[in-house]
Length: 199
Image (cartoon, rainbow, N blue to C red; front, top):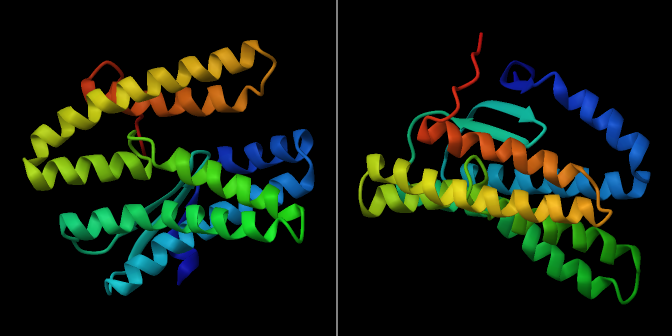
C-alpha cells in the first residue's frame, strides 16, 4: 500500500498554508506541478532500473525517496539526474509553447529554477547526490563524504549569502530560509552540528 510508504513531515502542511497566503494560486500550482513532475522523473528512472520505492518522505525541502535494495553508483547517479532532467526538458518545451500561451513562460520558468536549484552540489539535493556518488565511484565512500561536505558547505554558504543580499534588496525570505536548511547538512557531515534526533 502506497499510504504505508509515504511519510509527510508536520511542517509541510504549515508551509503550504503560508505559501497559499503569500503567493498567487497560479504560481503555487506551477511550483507544485513542477515538484510532482520532478519526483515522477526520479520514479520513472527507478522503475526503468526495475527498482522499488521503500519509503517516500516529503519535507519542506522536497521529497526523499528510500529505495529497496542497493543500486550501483552509476544507477544512483542516473536516478539523481532524472528529476532535474525532467524539469530542464520541460522548461525548454514550455518556453517554446510560451509564444502561443503566455502562461507557459511562468510554468517553464518554475521548472528551470527547480531543475537548476536541485543540481546544486549540496546534500540532500540531487546535485549533492551526483557529487557524492561520483566521488565514491571514482575514489571511495569515505573520501566522498569529505568531498561532498566541503563542496556542499561552500556552495550553501555562497547561496545563503546571495539569498541574504536578495532579501536586503527587497526579495522574499523563502530562499534564505531554504538555504539555511540546506546549510545544516554539510555542517552535520563535518561534525559542527549534531544530527536531529528521530523517533
